[in-house]
Length: 145
Image (cartoon, rainbow, N blue to C red; front, side):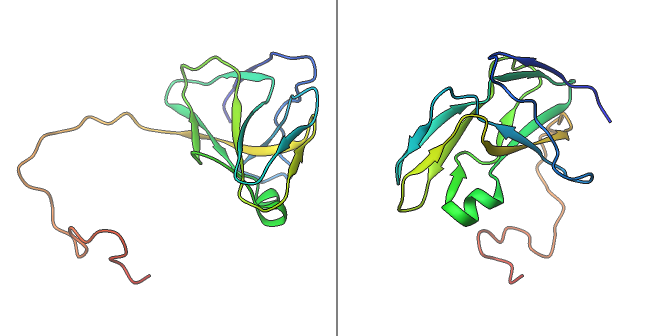
C-alpha cells in the first residue's frame, strides 16, 4: 500500500473509492454543479473536483467504467489516460458518447475509474542488433490468438 495525498478543489468533490475489497480501480465522481448533457458523438471534459500527489515512479491510469460503456455506450477518450507523478491540477475526465441518445452526467455521479500503478524509468541503449523472437517483426494482426 502507498500513501497518495489528495486535495478537494471543490466543496462537492467526492473522494475516490473502491466498490469491493479487491477492486483494482477507484471510482471517480463528477464534481459538476449542474447536469451536463452529453450528446451523441460529442465529448465533454468533466471535473472531478480533486487533485492528487503521487509518489515518484507511480502513475494514475484513468479508465472507463464498464457499466456506463455497456448500458449507455459512454467511454473515456485517450483511455487509459495517465496522471503523472508531477501533475498537481484537477483531474478532468474526457467523456465521450458513442451511443445514439443524450446522456446526462449528474453531479457526484460515478464517471470513471482510477488505477494507481508503479512504472519503471527506462534507460534506452542504442544497439545494432536486437534479440530474435518467434514473432520478430510481425506487426498488427500477426498473431492468431
